Length: 77
Image (cartoon, rainbow, N blue to C red):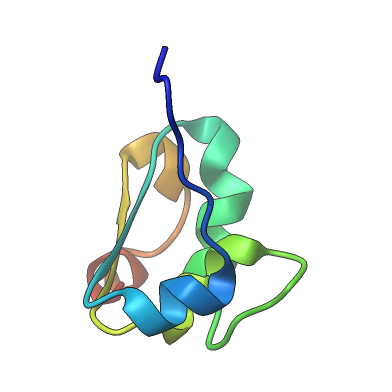
């Protein structure tokens, strides 16, 4: 277990990141993957959508998380 941790808010993420990378793995992340991939701006109900407003965002999904998303959406994000 780590002895220390860091907590950062959405504002810090937006100001301080040069690149945002999000990795979603597993069928349990399918709803999140769909929501984040479709986001065009930050939605407070889904904090992970902050990636939509970050510079140089990347969203990586495994097959289970991607589910029935079209290949075009998978490659575009």
